[in-house]
Amino acid sequence: SSSYQLMMEVSEFRVTNAPSDLYYLPNFISEEEEKFILDKVYAAPKPKWVQLLNRRLQHWGGSPSKNGMIVEPIPSWLQSFMDRIDKLNIFDDSNVKTNHVLINEYRPGQGIMPHEDGPMFYPTIATISCGSSTVLKFEKKPSEANENDASDLPETAQVFLERRSLVIVKGDLYTNYLHSIEERSSDTVDSTSCNFETLSRGDGDKIERETRISLTIRHVLKVSKFKFRLRT
Image (cartoon, rainbow, N blue to C red; front, side, top):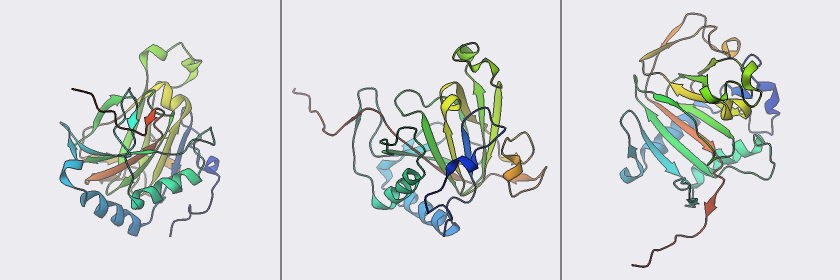
């Protein structure tokens, strides 16, 4: 079973040579839990999938929007992993708890353009990787070059996400950077990844991508408990 089931001090998993608040926890889930998650994700009803050009996804907890997320119940199997994240106290505000999970499916060669998760969410995200490893890249937002004391932060960074790992992104790295996954079919393990020293694979190892299911667990700031019906 996972060594993180007890309350853990996340600070010891901080990636020290990352630009800002990046935490990397290898083997956050067990192989059995990984298989369990994959089985549950693929057992979801077909309408739950949203097909995009280069990936498909599922929203759990509701669909975030600027008007507020209408809260939908979260299945207990998924809530148990959210509870485990909540026990790590990843949010600076101790009253904040996770309330949304975005599940992405990336097939080999698929990725995602540089983007930010933005102000709809508390500025902290936790992502569990299942089925495949990948590389998450960060690049500083152009407009932030000389604002918010971000000028001394590096322009780019990347973190290698192993299968079954948890990565936590917060602070400057959430607010002042865009993040992306390059469209390619393999990744190379080397010191360009800021968490290189904690990785189980050796320098120069080339790892073929398989289909990756990521669970991005976070807190939507504005929620509504009720569905409003428009009068016609």
